Structure formats: structure tokens, C-alpha cells
Length: 188
Image (cartoon, rainbow, N blue to C red; front, side):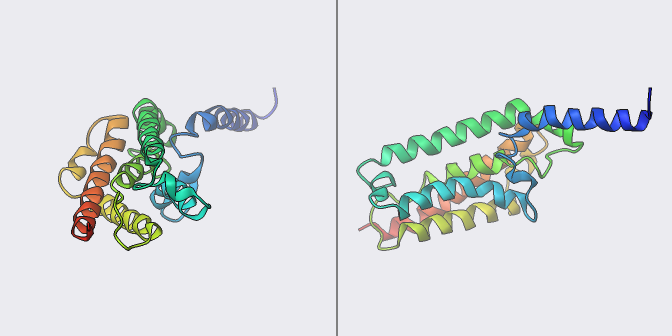
């Protein structure tokens, strides 16, 4: 009874309510819906974690080169694993739900790739503040994610979640290599 259009609209709203929580991790808790440049928004959480460690008193102990740096590396590794798993396990569903291949709203791949890049922050004193290294890591990762050097671009054609994820992990590795290449000459 009633208007069939209204029933369909109510069903769609219910579908969104059901799917939104399932999309939380793959959209990095909704950052993928931010505009402009959703990939940039998705790259921020690992940088914020590292930046907060720089700013809180005693937090530098938990950054590369600090007494408790293992905590930082474990946190970044967990981010890589959790958000990579989100891409792999929910990628097909996200593409279906959002109606396109590698949808911009899916930014878990950027979160994982950025965390991978941050694992290459210098572990020795360079004279450059750690916040500057984090900013440089962010710039390098975003550049590599946009440029998509070989083999990153071709990896996007892999199926579902793998196609969403792999190009960003390669971008993360390229950005990490760039950080290492710049920081090693400063080792003293």
C-alpha cells in the first residue's frame, strides 16, 4: 500500500544504513567521502599519529630513533595490515555498492600505503625535525600515488580489492625509497 516510490526510497535508505558501517574501514571511517582529493584525506591518519607523537611531551621516544621506536613500527605495521585487509576483503563489495571500479571513496589503500612510507622515516639524527620528515613522507607518497610509476598503474587492473590496494602499496614503497635516499647522506 502507499506510494511505491516512497517504499523504494525507504529501502534505499535502509540499504545505506546497513552498508555504511560495513564501509567504515574501507573509507577510513568516512574520510573517503571528504572532498576534494579523498585520497589525500585517506593518507592523513598515519601522519597525524606520527605528528602527535612529535608534539606530545616525551612522544619522540616512540618515533624512529627513539627508545620505544618499536611501538611506532608495530602501529604502522598494524595500520598497513588492517587497512590492506579492508581493501582485499571489502573491495569487491565497495565497488558494487558505489557503482565504479576503484571508487574515490575507498581510501583504505591510501591509509595503508602512507603507513608503509612512514616506516622509512630516518632512525638516526639528521638535524631535520621529525615533523618535516613526516611532511616530506606525505608529499612523496601523494606524488607517487598520483603519478603511478611502473608497475603501480598496471596493478590497478587486478581484480577487486587487490586492484584497489596494490598500486598504493607500490607508491608507498617508492616514497619510502625516496625518503631513505634523501636521509642516508645525512647519517652522521
